[in-house]
Image (tube, rainbow, N blue to C red; front, side, top):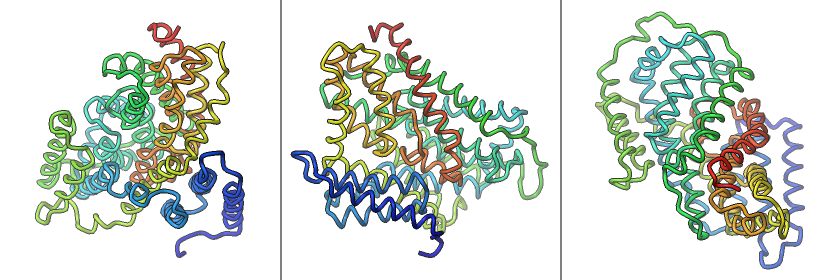
Length: 463
């Protein structure tokens, strides 16, 4: 247990969480789902560890897998499939590419160019939001964008004089990670969550949404308004002095080295392959993994082989697999179906308005995601949409937009893989993000959801 702070307060919290989980597991299960309470207890215990950071993420994930495997709550292969998933390949490849950008100086070079035109901190934050937002139209996954932007922005923070752990540094990393992820809900292929949710909608007989109509329904509110809110939150809650540019010296040259040029070419090819995924159908994770492995080839001088086994990288992949495993436990134990049945208890038999249905879906989705993770929540909430349509008159199209509106209200980093892993890549503690994420999640439900309803009514999607 070396490296773990086992202070009495933390031991007491762990004991409390364990006692609560045991009590849940021993509760009578609903009819037809004998393992539902056990699965719910395992997930609740794991989420409590993540939310309070009472243990490092690696150890919390290890405990989750140990309990899940010991109880046999889910089949072993699906439970462990996160380790060789497309998302895991994206994480590992992206982290190695980030190390290469730092080692070759490409990140510093681009950072200097970026900083030259951004004289104030609010302008810098706005530039990151706009630039990463534009990249969302080109690179189809958040993790792919993080692999490109984070090394550059870490270098930009250094050039601006923001030390790791400072408000300026945390604000920059949060904007690159959470800011880009949350606003990417507005663009259909730029966020894996969108794709999964729309696939689940089709699975229950719902309509197939095309790129253009989706963009029209979601970009103004989930993209532009959410982006402005995020910018304001960072400027107010994470204020920092104006960036300063350090003078060029031998350790931070202002010219591209041969290795940096080779990496720039590799990144250009990688982005091109991501953009053309509709042609070759190769998953973005495997493209990132190959690019990362190329960085490790001796003689190219892009990254050291030691980068492949760095503890932080392995921790990121392990934590990712645990988050995906939570969704598997919810599905196979019947806990997800139990939660969905409970959600339908809030739906009146008839007479409720479509706006009521929209707000019910958005709020319920946000609450469920706070412990079931976003992937698990989609599997839980989406099957309830037809019942809510019958009771409130809310169409399935508006219903899935309501679900995505709730998903963008992220309270904790562990809810979604890109935010959790992006903070690890940027070396920002998960607890440091709560000051921004929680107020944004609350305002996302109180302001974004009603604005989204008004916009859908204007478009004629909702009565």
